Length: 108
Image 1: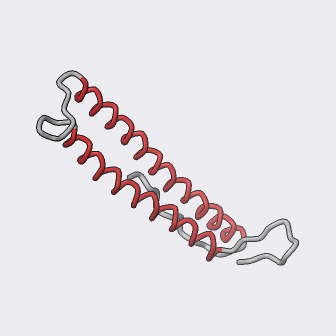
Image 2: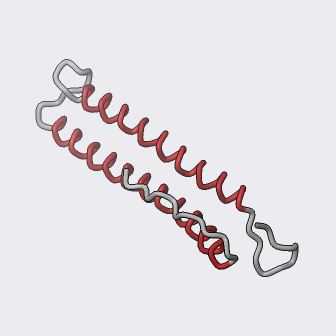
C-alpha cells in the first residue's frame, strides 16, 4: 500500500513493519540487559560484593532499582508506541477495504 510520489499520503507497509519490529526488538534487548545489570549491581552492593557500605549500599541499591524500573517502563512505552504505527496501517487498510486484525498490545 504505497501512494504515488508527491501525494499527501505515502505509506510503505513493509517499512512500517520493519521499524515497528526493530523498536520492539531493541526494547526487549534493553529490558534483558537491564535485568542482568540490576542483578550485577545488587550483588556488587551486598556484603562481599565489592562495594558494600553499611549505610549507603541499601540506599544505592534502592536508587538503582528505581532507575531500572523507570527504564523498564520506558521500554514498555517504546513497544506500545510501535503498536501505534501498526494501528495506523490497520486503520488505513480498513478504510481501503482490507480487513486486518489489530496487532497485539505490548504490556511487558
